[in-house]
Image (tube, rainbow, N blue to C red):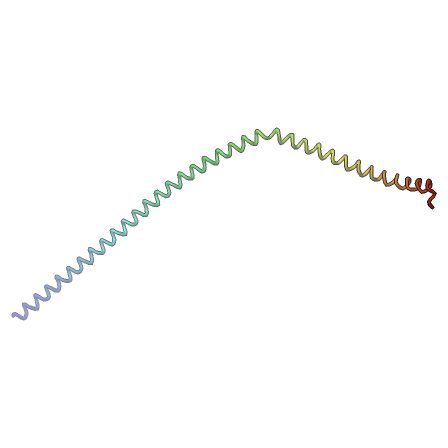
Length: 129
């Protein structure tokens, strides 16, 4: 009977050790799970902060763009009379250049025609055959 009692005690001790090991494994598993949950919560908090910052930056950029657009529109309105004058001066200048070109071509043709006659007159005056 002592043998049976010893065997039963050993079995009970083995069961107790198994329960203790299971409890320890459960505790470690829960600890790991809590660590992962804390990491996810930190990541979500970081992402929320980043999204908030990006929203503020986007709003700031949008405001700057509106300010720049208004400034560009005001500058264009202010410079429009000058641009109109410049276009007028340019068209007048192109007209003058065209007249000078036509006049130069006419003067050159007249000089070429008159040059032939002038060369003939000089040769006759100098008596060069």
